[in-house]
Image 1 (cartoon, helix red, strand yellow):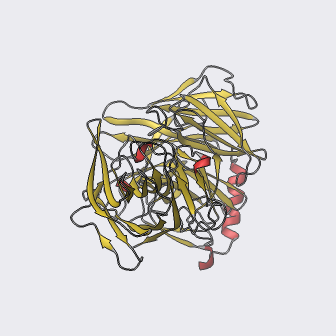
Image 2: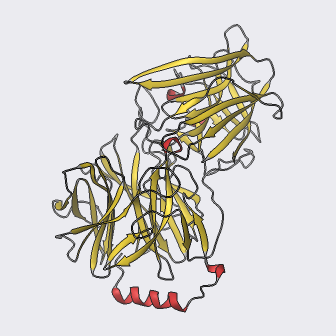
Image 3: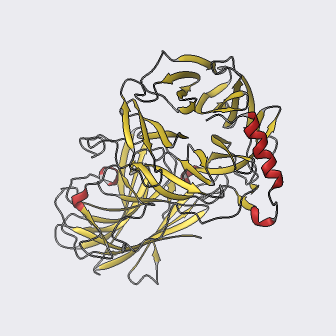
Length: 527
């Protein structure tokens, strides 16, 4: 939606008239939430800010977060439950959506409707959803089968819908606002430089502010840092000129650039950007950066350099809710949980044993990446620990149940029931190298108790040249813990999954048939 010059000046005047006392300031220390929330796009509707992010193959997908201070964000809903009930999302026949799924959602508000647009690489098509109620839905879905708008951004203007998209060459297309069919062939409007570039323009965010059309995008000079570049023109079709508006590292020792995200104007006239930073195994983590307009350019941070400490001129409000403890006693899963791919609903329950999450085996799986009904939450930096209490009485021969440090290189700690009726506590590591996946048992010991406490401790390095490590512990009483000695999982953020590490709760059986595991609670804390 276009912000006219008169509206821009009126809001700026309102900002001057507003109180600037300390109660209207929120002090932010980047990164925000310190967890995997990449590909940010955001809008403001009234006094409320909404942000969307990428979660790819996790279900439900396309999380919606709300905030009133741009610093504290709460998951309030999802745009869809699953993209398809097919072999891909049922993890059948070796098929999956790892590294694919929902990418880089664009969120916009127009004429009383919220619109979300994204692509899914496994289907090579674009999806558009809309709703009147962004927090509760329902969302109306349209599949655009004949178009693939990579890293797209919508712009609604005077009843018309425009989309900018692409990788390297940025294209502009006008869509019918009702059917979303192309009104004309896409046009090339930006041809990003090629020489010396490792990654050319992508991750577009499209705005009309004042007299200018702006496209924010990321690029990555060879041997350099992730960079935020802005293109502008007074004509929607160009020609566009460019300027670097954010480049560098924050003063936190982590040598990774900060870029890709959206900008928003507050109700008091200030502008801010939410941009993410690649941060190793924990994932791609969001930051808030001030935006100052210099000669008509939205320069971010401190003169174009990312800032760690930022004062947001909004009143502090709320708390983060992107991961949380759970006692499984509410009768429904909290919105911080996501399944790995589509769940098999008959094989999980919160009602069969009230106060417990019951996960049933029942579908063959060779390992954790093939296991249905693995329930996940984000981890958080710089260090955290996740632990559960697990009732084992329902396990049958061949069942494996426990928790996992979940990514491509993963490690599970859990109890496995052997065919002879014995049970063992097992630490099972799975790694991938040169396209070949291997698995090994790191540790095994008999386990006779009918329950167990399991814990994973994550330590994410605050410098890019260190190792991100996970440590594994177990207990019979939840007080006295035994750590598996001499072993740590060296966590790596790999592009085959393309998401930060999560803690996954699982129960599966390589043969398919089996029993169940009851999870009493889940806890996570920053340490």
